[in-house]
Amino acid sequence: MRVVVLTWEYPPRVVGEMAHYAQFLCRELVKRGLEVHVVTYNEDLKGVEKEASGVVVHRVGNPVPTHLNVLTWVLTLSTEFERVCADIHYDLGSVDLVDCYEWLSVPAATSLSKALHIPYVMTIDSLEEQRSSYPDNPLSLAIRHFERLGTQSSSLVIVKSKTMKEEVQRLHGLPKGKVQYIPRNRTFVERIAKTYARIVARSR
Amino acid sequence: MFTWEYPPRIIGGIAPHVYDLSNALAELGTEVIVITCDFPGAADRERVGNIDIHRVDSYRSPTPDFASWTFTMNSNLQRYAAELLASGEKPEIIHAHDWLVAEAAIGLKHMFRIPMVATIHSTEYGRRDGIHTAYQRMIHETEVWLTREAWRIICCSNYMASRVNTVLGTPRENIVTIPNGVDVGKFAQPFDKEAFRRKYAAPSEKLILYVGRIVHEKGPSVLVEAAYRVLRSIDAKFILVGDGYLKDPLARKVWSDGLGNKFHFTGFLDDPEVKLLYRTADVCVVPSLYEPFGIVCLEAMAAGTPVVVSDVGGLSEIIQHDRNGVTVYPGASNSLAWGILRVLTDKAFADRMALEALKDVKDLYSWDAIARRTQEFYEDVLSEYLAGSWKPRLRD
Image (tube, rainbow over all chains, first blue to last red; front, side):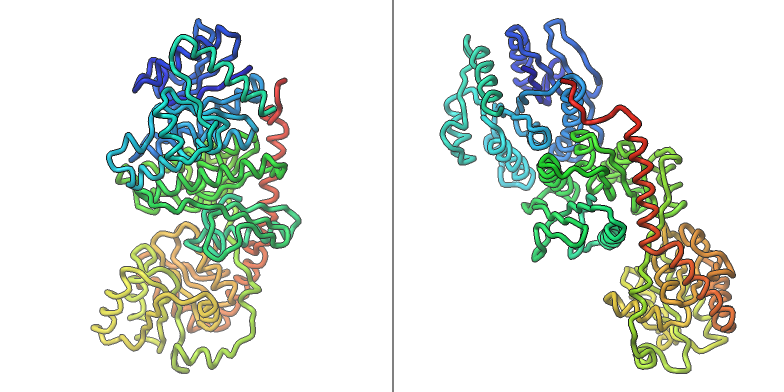
């Protein structure tokens, strides 16, 4: 199975918790026989790196360097994510699944799923509703728009806590079964791998 | 065709351009898919002849600024188009118009590996006379990105092509000049010229027409200065159609100078009225100080009216002095007055130029001619694409 993980942070670029989580998970998945490509942002380390672990990391820059807010920054970066993911798909072999981290990767993941019929799961660690002190401002509204788009057009939403599962279901009005809670304990890599396999099998 | 405006949604010059180009291409047998923003009252999906129009939800919630809306709208357009193209409707070329659809077009180009071309109608640098803020830089960088990703660029004049070359850094050989077009047929409906003329000028007055925004770079102040000179020799009425920040100051000036009755600042007029004015005028003047193309000049030519234009930008490429019009020094009111008087005092000369001009419009600037050149352009790009290895071919 060939998986592409779209994440805006991956070591050595560490902004929050996702970077280390992504690296740990990807390395463990490679050990289980998956082919894992990470597409991420890093202005200073652009290019492809094959880690000793076997994870292939594709780092891109933002084609438009100047931005006034995170929304436009994400949307121009998404196009680079699309380019790299399409290149993997055509040149290295068809991609079976995309794992889309947070709303930041949703524009790319959604377009890719429509264009190339690649199913995607969305991993959510936090929600704009909770992050923003004023979630109804225009910027937060647009972010929530993409968050909702992701929860709706992905095949499955993966969260790390029960509270988060309830929050996501409540905020985005999702049906039961759309959100899966996978605790980050000793068995979680196994469960993620199984979940990936289930989604890929279902979409075939 | 990706465009942020398409009739009935008309904001600037891109909507009529894409509309006329799409229709002319369709006339030649090219299948055209237009993907654009939605508009109240317009159908979400419409087929007109060979043109398939898709109007996509363009995101209606408030956004922090225009660019944030633009990029969010692009994301919506792209998602819609991705689904459409994946369902089997695969175009051979993606054609984007200006930075406003860059994000959507570039992503689709890569996901489907279809060659993408772009028309640059104007640049942020030109519109703002330089890049002064971070916001403007973001748009400027988006334009650079679009021209870098595009297989080739179309500009409407050699002047604009050289601007795109220097301002955006696009190699000159990647830019093709295909002019804007004008539809001569739209200037041919019968009308009562004498009655129409009486609305604007006395029978003894020559009718001198200016059409355009009343702003510095279009040169209306130069025209007013020139008008004073012209009025010393002949009786005339100067009609200035359009709005702009110089309209009120100039109108006040001509009244305080005692010549207010020789000028008429009409403000914005609707299209049919302007077309009739073109056909009624004795001369049409385009005194611009800066002009990427000069559509007003072409419209006057299509109406069979002699033109006097400043020798700048796209105008210099359309008009050859004494053959199909009169060119004058930009910013020089005495030169402009000389040009106007030349046309108004030698009817045979003026008629001959107007005939030459009309012939040019039909030969070079008809939408049919432009669509043919655009088709050739598409075919050049396609043959290069077909010869290359970048294809949507799966490895396994």
